[in-house]
Length: 254
Image (cartoon, rainbow, N blue to C red; front, top):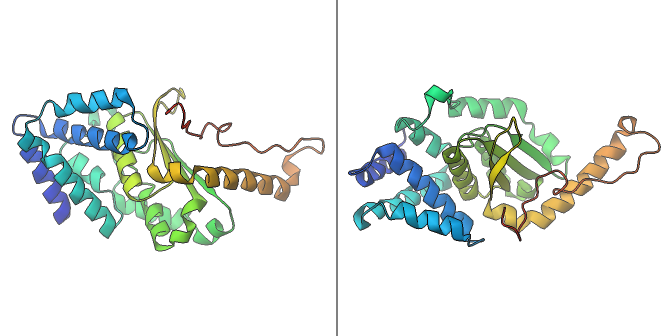
């Protein structure tokens, strides 16, 4: 672990004097995710959940949570990496009995460097990157680091990440939000396609209209550049993000 991760763990342990440390970590992820979400949507049910979680802690214990968030934000500002995923495993919060194992971050970086070619990104108006079992978002964070090196390319990327474990959803949502990624994280079953909740990052909400335009234009370009894939009498109607099931409903908040 890094020095900041050690600081973070100490804060979790300080808040865990009357609680289990990994329960405290999960509570931290839940209230932080809710805070980010409700900064935009003001969901009463999530506000109630936030109050219920915080009600378990004394003021001294609760003060550890904003301090931990400050450590996390500073660490990700210095360098994009899987901060929470490492802490999650250090505290023993991952469920090995359910087959939950996290890919080491250096392997995530290697796979990104091998499989992702920046030159190809530049040729497209938008790149849709989907992760069906995202964990803490470790496979997406190396791409965020590349985007940070070239911030003008940020709106060329849309991440759609899914996980069955709600704490993993919260971790990915928090880290991708702090990295400024255009992302929608779904608490869902990838196999049955059942969706329980959806968590859009603040950057996604701000850039949604431009992402929609880029997605439609790119689809039109793909159709015209690959005429063999369509019949001559096909009517060309590009799918919107809503039709693809990727659009977050701002009015419904889900």
